[in-house]
Amino acid sequence: MEKKRRKFTQCPNCGYTFEEVNNYCPNCGQENHDLNVPVKHLVEEFLEGTLHYDAKFWLTLKYLLFKPGLLTEKFNIGQRASYVPPFRLYVFISLVFFFLLAISPNTMEVNLNDKDRLEQLDPEEREALAELDSVRARLAAQEMDASIGALVEKARGENVDTKLLREKMIHNTSFLMFLLMPLFGYLLYLFYRKLRRNYVEHLMFSIHVHCFFFILFMIYLALKFFLPQSAAIFLLVPLITAVYSYLAMMRVYKQSYLQTLLKFIPVSLLYMFCLAIALLGNVVVSLLLS
Image (cartoon, rainbow, N blue to C red; front, side, top):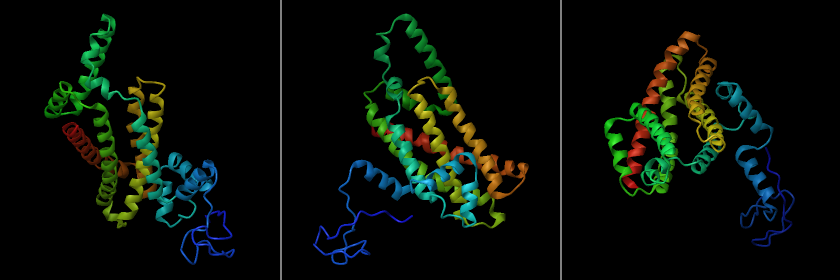
């Protein structure tokens, strides 16, 4: 899409007199575009420049959410002009995702510093909180090994800056997800190597799946503002993502239900294992540096 310009008649930087065709000053190189406009126009231009915030964006979003694998398929066959480029889409969605994650209701501080607050609660509230902690402990035991659990327990007894800890974890997670995305593409490359497809095609698939996951998780984060106890909703996020990924693999790789399932299961397990190791490592490093 061609950029809509509000052109000067004279360059404000060097005074060169523009001709109608000049998008940049031939003398100093400054862009011939007036930015002295209301903020609304600047926001619209930013979205237009980064995402082509028009029918192209909405069509991309529609296919991403409701047509698993279609964007990847169209990219692979060369039909790309009508859709937001995958990397640009990922950058925009991930920025919004981690912003929402940063401002979402924080339960970490309650978990790490709830001992002093227990004394201020009445007996019924203490009993309810104790039951909730019991449930959390059972879930944590399934997801964390003994050493990590001991580290967290140690942190509870110390003056941990929970705000700093949260910020570090979110920052590190954004970096980890960026690294894990090409890993997922490489796993697909290995399991579908007989199809002799380039790695880039698998990487595009990975980008689109991660974008879908981020959007789904953003919906969950939005619901947390209204439904603080939304653990059941949280469990739907990986479940829906798994179904979406399976259907997308069927569309992109053109194999049967069974063939796709036999690849989907090991790819998913390997990726989840790598993801778990990365996130647990993030917790450890963030705790040690807080």
